[in-house]
Length: 453
Ligand code: NG1
Image (cartoon, rainbow, N blue to C red; front, side, top):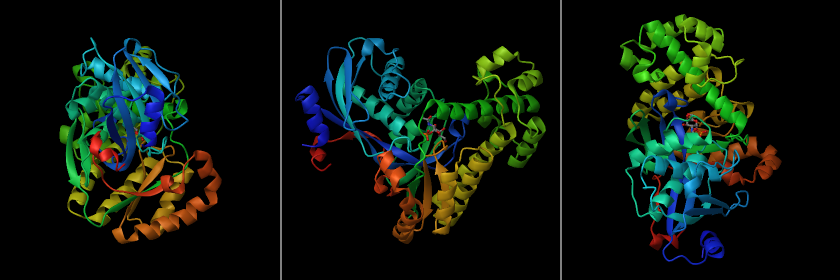
């Protein structure tokens, strides 16, 4: 019996037919901080992920436990889903999944069954590898299984992206979409609003290695604030640019997204749009008061409608706009490069993406910089931070015959001097530095396969 099964039996007794579900983590190859702007991304699912062994119960509760002692047992009442756990508690992601399923009627509220579940994971947390969305997705699959339901993956990904925002970060929809829709051997080009996906085969000779900076990219209050600040900056940039271009900044009553001002939507080239951005924003940071004066929108309305952080916040609109617009162009080029097997072109795009994340989007940190510089020295064709940034991991593109030497060199030059940091993080070297292959999306693991796990 696996640890997952024995813990399940110890806590809940023998269930008649428990189901085993799994959702993968991901690395985003390129397209950072583009999803919430309505621009595409290009991630792939990795072989690491979160599993959940679950069986239905009929008293309207969900009981959850985790083989990782850092995450304690919790009980969730299905009729009290509005009661969140303290901020940062892992149960909030299970709660978010349940809310999403009920709000969007994937499971009818009346007579909904709860479930008992034990989770385990080989996906490092707080690493920018999307463990939070893997937890949301696997929890949703467990709830659907307990209630004998299935769901269209596109609709489910959209609902779960919305639902995960209850946990605090105003994320796009990349992580839930890749977790549900990934295809083995492929990256996925994902477009948003509405969600659409297109598999892009990863060519032979393109291998990827993940390096963890050992700086947690946790969804803590501060990291969430920094992330949501970027989201607000993009909303304001879209408002001001739309106004400058004479385009309605609130189509259908909602703040316009930057992608609605794309070259395709406006008929303007990237360079013309960059010039228009320079004219509209200037180079100095903006305050909410500046934006209010420029647009005539009363300050309180602006703060509320654009969900602005505190009144003293400064917004770097030109820099954020430049990153998003050029990153979107890089995603299109990267999808073509990968599909055409052009590994070197893909690498250059990844390098440019990293520079833009660092210089214009300001989401890098010294440890990520050190990793990227070392990676380039040790033969990576492309090296960049992946995920939201502020810590977490880099993703590195290697020619296939160089993976082993690359890993040896990175272990020696980055991790050897950080054994204590690694030990304190609870990770082994293999959890921090590993090759990854493009893997399948979430689903059920057949009972017959369970022995092999
Ligand atoms: P991570 O790395 O999981 O925090 C976040 C968002 C994504 C995307 C990236 C940046 C969530 C759940 N995920 O990812 O939607 O915006 O940052 O590209 O908020």
